Every structure is written in C-alpha cells, then in structure tokens.
Amino acid sequence: MDENNTALNKITEDLTYHIRITRGFKIWMGFLIIGLCICLYAYTLQLRYGLSVAGIRDYVSWGLYISNFVFFVATSLIGMLISGVLSLTGIKWITPVARIAEIIAVAFAAIAGLVIIMDMGRPDRLTNVFIYGRFQSPILWDVTVVTTYFVLSALLLFLTLISDIAWVHKKTDHLPGWVKKSYSVLSLNWTNTPEKNRIIRRCVRILLILIIPCALAIHTVTSWLFAMTTRAGWDSTLFGPYFVTGAFVSGGSAVIIAMYFFQKNYKLQNYITNRHFNNMGKLLVLVMLVYLYFNINEFLVPAYKLKTAEAINLHDLFSGRFALMFWAVQIGGLILPIILMLFRKMRAPLPMLIIALAIFIGSWFKRYIIVIPVQEHPYLPIQYVPYNFKVYTPTLTEIAITLSSFFLALIIITMLSKFFPVVPIRETAVERGLIEEEE
Image (cartoon, rainbow, N blue to C red):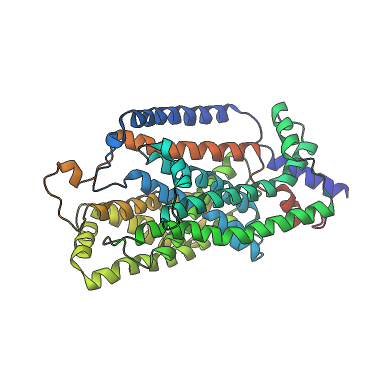
C-alpha cells in the first residue's frame, strides 16, 4: 500500500509539474497577446472601412476567412476521432493523448465560430442568423452544428477533468493560491466515491456517443456549403466524406505537434512516449490513405469527363496559377508524409514533429485551394471590371486578421494545458494498477 501511495504521489507530481507560472510561460503568453493585439488592430480597420480592406471582391467573395473557417472546423474533429471512436472501442494507448485531442477540439471549435464573424462586413447583424434564419439555409445548419459540437466538446473536457481537479487540489501544495481557489470551485465538491465515478463514466460515455454524429455532421454540413452550389469544382457528392477524412488528417497532425511540445516542455517523457508517437503515426497513415483516395476521386472523375468549366478549373490547378501550391500540398503535405511514415524510424518524436508540421501547413493550404480557384472561374464571363476583381490576392490586413485566429487558439490551448493536467491522472493510475476502477 505504501508503495502504491508513493507511486501515485509520483504520478501526481509529474503530471502537475507544469502547473506553475514560469518565466518561459510569461514570455510565450506575452508574445501571443502582443501578436493578437496587433491583429485585432487590423480588425478594427476592417470594422471602420468595411471588407474593402480585404482582397474579397464580387467574384471571390470567400477568401482567406472562409478557407480558415473550414480549416478550424476540420481540425476540431480530432476530438471525436481520438476521444470518441478510439475510446469507445477500448483502445488503451490513447489515454495520454485523449485530453490533448479534447483541448485542441475545444480551442479550434471555439475559434471556428469567431472566424465566421471575421468574414462579416456587419458583425452587428449576426443575431439575424438566429432571428430570421431559414431551415433551408445550409449556413443556419452550420452555425447550429458548430455551436452544438463546441458545447459537447467543452462538457466532455470538463467532465473528464473533474476528478483530476479535485485530486490535484487535495494532493498538491505547489500550486499558486488563485489556482487552488479556482480548483476548489471547479471541482464542484467532488469526492472520490464509487457512485460518483459511475455517474461520471456514464455521462462521459453518453457524450462520447453523442459527439460522433455531431462531429460527422459539423464537417459534412460545412462541405454542403460548397457542394450544394453548381460551381465547377464544388459540384460533387463526394465532399461530405472527403471533408471528414481531411479533418482527421489536419487534426491528427495538430495532436502530434502538441504531443511533442508537451512532452518536452512539461517533462512528460514517461507518459507521452515513443510508443504513442509510433501509434499516432500509424493512425495518421491510415486516415491519410483514405484521404488520398478521395483526392484522386476528386480530380480523376472531372478530368475524365472534362466539361468546359471543369477543364478550366483543373488546368488552373494542375499547370496554371495555382499549380505550385497545388502540387506542393499534394506531394509535400500528403504523398511524401505517407511514404515517410511507413518506416518505423520516421515515427519517432522529432521526425513525426517535422512531418506533422508539413501536414498541418499543407492542410491549411488545401482549404485555400478548395475555396479560392473555383470562384475565379464563374460561368458568366468577367467583363469591364478592374483586374483585382478577376484575381484574388489577400491583403496584409486580411492576413493579419486571419493570423489572429491562430494566436487566439494558441492562447486557449496554452491556458488549458498550463493550468490543468494534460495527461489524465486518475486514468493513468488505473492503467498502472495503483487504484481500482471502481473507486
């Protein structure tokens, strides 16, 4: 019993080591806040002068903002794949990874809603979406499922944290006073009894079941915003599963990047191990192979039929203005990472970090390729308009506003991971046989 208590105290100390205000944390948060303030200044210019400060025009009405929205919605789905699908199937190795996925899901789902506001010339009219929204509008569906998914993800994260919050509040003395007080409130007077543990497990299981169809709906509906038009390049019945598998790719890369930095900065080498990077690499290869299949389908079918409008769009992608970006994304962000991750040595932490960064960046530019080129080739000819109406080029203001979403997402992820255990304490103790599951 004494050995178990010693081991349990060691786990608690290791997994709460990072919960303290350090100089590095202050510097990092200072950088993020300054960057966010600069970007928010750019947004005040857009509020003052309208969307004319962006590169958005009559023809390309969806620019960086909607590309970014699709990317954030996509990345947030990783919470469903890791915590939902893999947890319900009883896979144990994901225990140290699940909470990281949940944190990313909450942060990216929250920012996805804000990104939509960035695209609005009159954000004060946002309430009209709810007051006058029509059921026939896919935009209303999108707002509804994004909000629902965020609420479910936040509840799931909180419920899995309650027992850890109560345990840390009781067992640790190094926490700052205000953190201890916050833990006291957030723990909701939790006591570790069999009945309460059963209630939490039941509630978590219900949320895991609910979050799967909701997550599938969130990105399927997003794909319908494109596919329900008749534009060449978007007019496809494939977009639902195509978007969902692409979401697992971008979300999986985000989790691997976070795993690496948490392992190194929070000294979690004994909990986030090479085994977890190896398994995440295998999982990423699986979803990327499915995504590659959908990519081939996306271009092979229209290329075979080669209708006039489709031919113009495909020419622009394969050998025209977007060719460099297109092939860089397909080869550097999809094909090459798949090949590299087939080798075990490339599934070690550092190689996985580099590969995941390439996939993450490629995933963002993939959304840009989906959104922008199609709009530059409308069915009606573009006549008697300035050149910047024909070709979309993001402005510096637009880029700064887009970057603000990444700064804000990093702030949320940093705060959640800094002041709460990144690796579940109780589940780790159960897996190592230090406490019984029924307790």
